[in-house]
Amino acid sequence: MGIENRAGMIKEKKPLKIAIYSGTVPSTTFIENLIKGIASEHEVLLFGKRTAPIKYRSPRIKIYGIPKNRILNVILTMFRVVKLLILYPTRFVLLWKELKTYPERYKRWYVLSRLVPVIIHKPDIFHIQWAKDIRQWMFLKDRFGAKLVLSLRGAHINYSPIADVELANTYKELFPKVDRFHAVSKAIAIEAQKYHVDKEKIEVIHSPIVKTTFDAFGVFEKRNMDCFLMVSVGRFHWIKGYNYAIDAVKLLKEKGVQVHYTVIASNAISEDILFQIDQLNLTKEVEILNGLPQHLLFESLKDYDCLILPSVEEGIANVVLEAMALGIPVVSTNCGGMAEVVTPNETGWLVPVRDPEALAGAIQEVAETPEKEIQRITLQAHEFVRQHFNSETSIARFLDFYEMVME
Image (cartoon, rainbow, N blue to C red; front, side):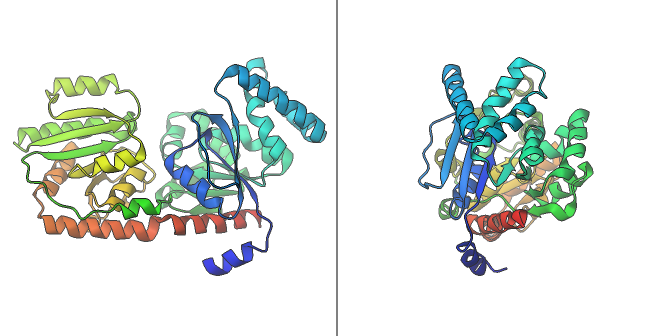
């Protein structure tokens, strides 16, 4: 069905109540983009802990969050319980039966504070953003007949169930009951099938990149400096592979290639990384910076000659898509779905995982590549991301996807 025809038909239908659940309000950038896009046609309900103040322009976005303050949480939860009992006594009974399945008193309260606003407002579709949350919300389908949608993203599918047998068994038990799945890449859609996901229920929809990111594109220009500046962005976690990037810096230093590597991370640096930097005598070559708001991050990225993604596993890393949209050269490991966006000699440089030598070689190649050639590759990367990851196309596909869920 064409987007124009679909949009016309939607107007004749009653807007859906769609819950986008990530556990926190506000959520990550790409989930926030989804929320705003879906609100163009449907009512969007947000549940979970409120971690920061946020206001949305659209009146269709409704926040029913949980306060960080414990006293406020108790007061609001009790008010909501009374409201549920008065307005929807049948729903209250079903909720009470669900709570009795939790033996510990504290756990019951924890679950109650999260469930009661959802039961009051009862969405048509409950879209879970992180797979590990699946068990907590399965009762919405079992007791209330809500449609459950689950996003298949990075760590929750690629390695968490491998490291946790109980989690893997939970997936195998519950995934067959989910109505539809959204996968961020083809690779992760294939991986999820190990846990009894019906491939016919999976829709691959890329994470939406907003227009303002593409508008910030700049033609790449080589700086007249001796030192090649590289950057990685992401939390400190072994899956991000920073140790391999630091090993690559050591190899480049030994070759006489002057490089400086910056890691911009939202969490505290891990001791093993600090130890590695010190042991390899790279305190001048490696710098750690605190995370930045997105608009400041984008401005900062333009100061670097290359973005490095040394990860062991990913879905499709949003930071790579954003760098490509901005016009920054990208060197990525061939993990998860990264080969779906980074094509050697076309949109970037792709190297094997856990291979510092290959990573160092690719970095040196970027440093030695003529400016016009890098401009060709970064422009192709920009156009590729604009075509396949723009928010208009992604949101339109999500709107179609939710229609299929209801059908």
